[in-house]
Image (tube, rainbow, N blue to C red):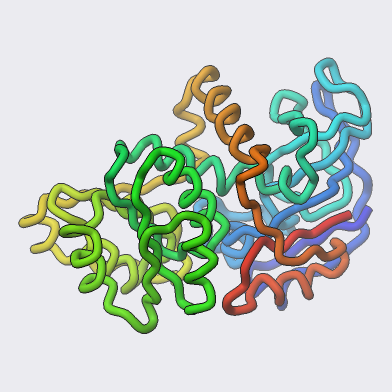
Amino acid sequence: MKDVIFEQVGSPLEVLQLVESSDPIPKKNEVLIRVTARNINPSDIMFIQGLYGIQPKLPSSAGFEASGVTESAGTRFPKGTRVIFSTTGTWRELISLPESTLIPIPEGMPDEVACQAVVNPMTAYLMIEKSGLKKGDWLLITAGASAFGKFAIQMAKEKGIKVACTVRHDSQKEILEKLGADLVVNSEKEKLQKVIPVKTEGGVHVAFDAVGGILGAKALASLRKDGLMMVFGSLSLENIPVNSGLMIFKSLKIEGFWLSSHMQEMDQNERKEAFKKVFQFLTDKDSQIDVAEKYPLEEFAEAIKAYEKAGRNGKIILIS
């Protein structure tokens, strides 16, 4: 089978290679899956670079999230069942996984949506739930044009939450406004910490930060008194310089959010309800799930170049 692996951490275009690996043999309670689609997430790139929360066991396959079809029968899923799964090493043609970790794809959901049905939409849903935001409150999302940002905008608007976003390209403003964003700020041209308090009646109640660094600090300064910033990414690869005085006198809070650990803390009923709500959103005809381009697995290098393209609008998908 074709398998995209890396034998040392580093820049994906420098360390990734396509190899022929032996087909996996399912163990007890596992099923063999033919992978049909994988989306490229920031966590995939950081994992290859050795910068993610878990470290690769080298040599390692790349990718965390995918969809596929079962090649062998299990006790719950017969052969030919379309499934969603998250694991380490999805950039390959075949994978063997415990049947208990698989999620059946809802009828009518295409592979390019199914392969991105967990990480970003689930993170957006659970962060909104955990934030305590209410109808009429203001939410700030950094990197608003990301897949997460677009999901979070749509989910927040369903609850009547007002949404402000940051972008780096003016061309992205109209896209997010059409999704429901109330305010879109180009952080390359406008002073976020000046614009937000004026446009949001004194600052946002909650900020979701995926960037870190200076933009993260500006997002923190955009909070109103007793505000909360939830940090779930570090796209800038830089730590947030925290203003201690701001934290003290405005009684601000910063907390981290990692989907993997959060879902481990949820009981079975909570997870079931969360997936139900997220899948309802993804299958709603009015929901917008963007796909920019699709590439065959063996063209992973071209897919990564497309992923890195400035101003990209939509997910890059690796298909088999």
